[in-house]
Image (cartoon, rainbow, N blue to C red; front, side, top):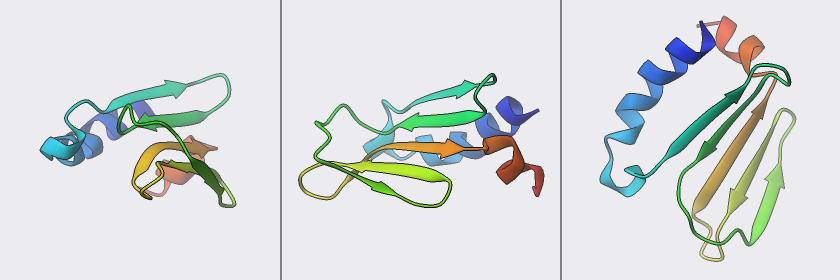
Length: 76
């Protein structure tokens, strides 16, 4: 279910040419959703309660990792 939901939601996001090479991976065993937005080099990673946001030197998001992803999307 999570994979289907993410696919529909992220399809709209992926239509933006800026993220046309976006890659999405869901690890069922660890319940982690990983979204790679670009191939830029990661300069820093910001940690929130349930996720990591990796950014390039110019502050642009490169990768998002969401922990306990199924719980987050269960509300939708």
